[in-house]
Length: 515
Image (cartoon, rainbow, N blue to C red; front, side):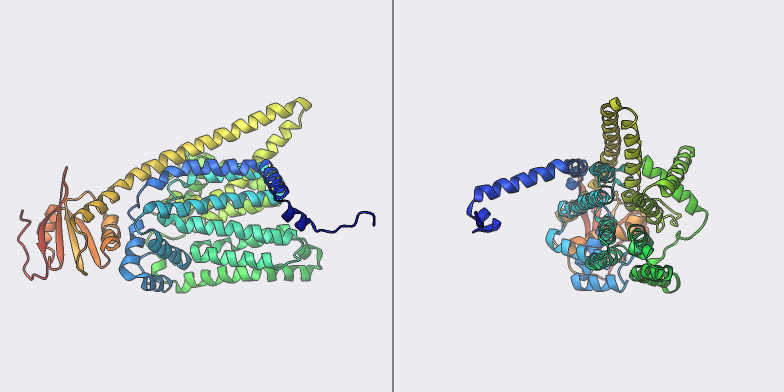
């Protein structure tokens, strides 16, 4: 050998740090140059949602905050698992994260909201990686990422504190799909991605029990992207497919049977059943995915029925003629809405959050197919087709982002009244004895749902073993509540809450409010 090698490449790099730095910088530049579009999508998503970080907690957020502070972390987590808490669901993973956030952030809403936004940005990145893997086209992944990132369909969700189950579970489902598709495309040589996919799906279920419905979507992804089960003899192939789907099916079937036959009363509520309103709600949500303008309606008008019909037709075409990932995404949209369309008494934008993650790939794939056909129509069509495609993406992102910002701002302003309540209670009482009830007379927190759990939970979040109720003056004086272990505050416009009666451990009741 004329020129023997006497040092390894690692040794050469370690001996020449400038060379190492240059190589790292070069690799980083190539990576950014190839994937610049996802960095742009993440930046746009962050800028649209960043203003929500300064908003306070909303009313139902205090149900969680008050439960943790009142019961203590251990008892709160135990009650969550055993379904003895006052939250109408079973989400132990989400409960554990809530408890951790309480100890880290307390009543600093910005920290809680930052966690949600970080999870949303992670979902945007995972969606891009998923589509890049299956389409090999960064543009498709980036368009889907920006649609999902800024869509007005999930305003008041991305950083809404108690929307964490939707945001977290969606990230876990997307990650589960990415893992099982990687397992299938790599020839099933390594079982680790498969079991990672199952673990992520199980965590999604623990974060939001409604996400058990995604089991068929994940199994469908495996079935469409895996080749070994199709190449095997029929019975062996079907057995292989069944065995791969069995762990996912076990969770979905087990929870479905439990919910249907032995479901805890905490998991059911009035106004949730299968009826004709399911079709109506599907029309609302499908049209909402396409045009998320204003507030989500309760019932669809003629325009929304039309948009829903277009969405159904486009979904059918994508499932029939589209690539495998489009078929998975269409199934994902249908499944994502399945736990929420039986709700007869209201619709909510957060219920569409996961559906957007599957709608976005369908829209991106369809849009790229049109662009690809246009740019190949003539040698001179490439530049104008590219410019029109960029304008179209910018227009859709701008309109979606504008709706998201406007509706988030409206919701953020609504949190001011809860900031006001917290500030006024703190201004009057640094602390109160355990078991204290705070009566607020003629305050502005009058919504019946607020009185049931929200206003009482504010006192629990502040003081632990305490409760608060907002009553009209007439009701307070007519019912004469027991004022033992109580505080009474009166709302005075321009002055806020002022104490008008303080009684501790006194058996007598007042005849009315005295000043």
